[in-house]
Length: 152
Image (cartoon, rainbow, N blue to C red; front, side):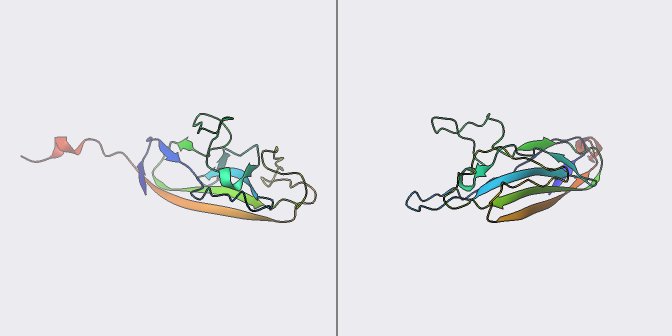
């Protein structure tokens, strides 16, 4: 992908498989979104403050079940504006977290983040898996309007 210095770029991480089977009586894993790491050295932004059930990650839902694209904290859309030419690395870091069978659901609970950027998992959390999605964008200088330089 390519972008131009000073031009806004929208970045997003979404779950394209939102299926949940109500017939299965098993605890659903949750997602802890650790945020985007933009550039090198990385600036971290958009860290989640709530654990989200896997089926709803990447979707905002209002109380009556309709999509709410303005509600903060659930979607992971963000706009960045590169300030210089060259490769720009963007990473999305998140954890898929198992819930304890028979325990309280972890979905929509507050996440406590440690100073090192990792989550503090509740006691009894049976498993978790850190995931990192990385993408590099080639940022180029604006070239201006080439039509003025075109020949006859």
